[in-house]
Image 1: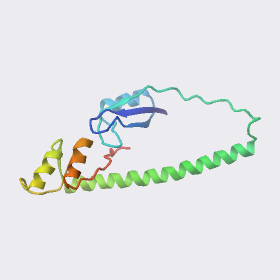
Image 2: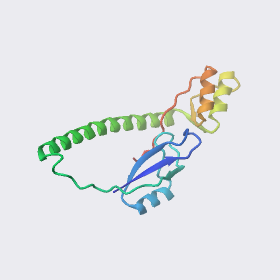
Image 3: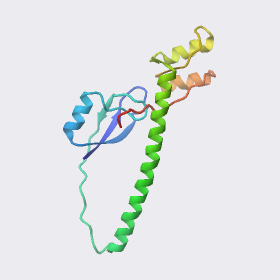
Image 4: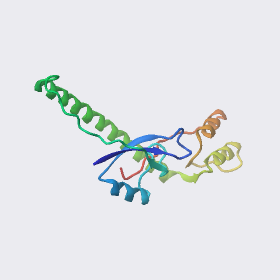
Length: 160
């Protein structure tokens, strides 16, 4: 498995969202990228690029620094921490995917027109209805300042 550092270049992620992803090999990464299967975990965009990655080399251990008992305790502690972190991440991921499906089922996707549609509904120019879409951080902040209730939901892909 290869761990790549990726970055979202979507206009909806401020300063680019950097994250890590694991792939079987470089061909697997390239196939998924060409198929549009790699998405930003924050905004859901497929405008993701691979950052420069350094190889992860295992350092030789120095037996004088830690005896085997200390090494085993350290490894056990790390294993427990990783297991607990994975449980929390899995719960959050499941929650976000469930929330995404509910929003998609009960709302209308308006894409980049989200900010305009929300303003028109607030002004009474169009009928109020549940909508979802995209807007820049600045535009979303302006909607909130105008008293329009807007919720940011991290839009994660379904296949991870």
